[in-house]
Amino acid sequence: MRAARMLAAGPALLLLAGCGFHLQRPAHLPPQFDAAWLEAADPYTDFHRALDGALSTAGARFAATRGTAAVVVEVLVDDSGQRVLSVSALNKPTEFEVYYTVRYRVRFGEREVLRPQVLTLTRDYSYDPTTLLAKEQEQQLIREALARDIAALVVRRLAALPP
Image (cartoon, rainbow, N blue to C red):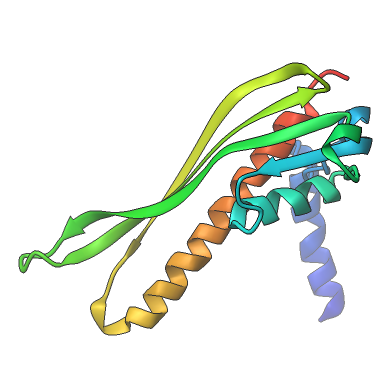
C-alpha cells in the first residue's frame, strides 16, 4: 500500500518540478533594515502587528529610537471597514465587502526612497442575520487576513529597494 502511494506520488512530483513551480522564498531586505523604525499613529491595528511580524521574519532589526534608525517605514493611513454589496427584497443586507487600505512611505535617513504608496484589498462575504456572532467573527478574520496580505506586499516591495 505504501509503495503504491510512493509510486503514485513520483509522477506528480516530477510534473510539479517540470512546470517551474517553486515555493516562495522569504524576502531579503536591504542592509539598512538592520536598524529599522516602524512609525504609525496607532501601533495596535491589525496591519501594524502584521507588518511588524513580517519585517522581523524578513530579517529586519528594530532600532531603539527613531533617531538611530537607518530606515523609517511610515504608515500614513491605516483604515478598514465594510460596505453593503447587496440587499434582499426586504431591503436587508445580504452581502458585505470588507476593505483594508494602507498608505505608507519609506525613508533612508532623510532621503525618501519610496514615495507614498496606497494599497487596498477587499473581500466579500454573505450575511445572515440569524448567525450574527459568527458573521462578526468572520468579518474580523477577513480583516486580519487582509492586513497580513498587505503586510506581505509591503515587505516584498521593501525587499526590491536598492541598498
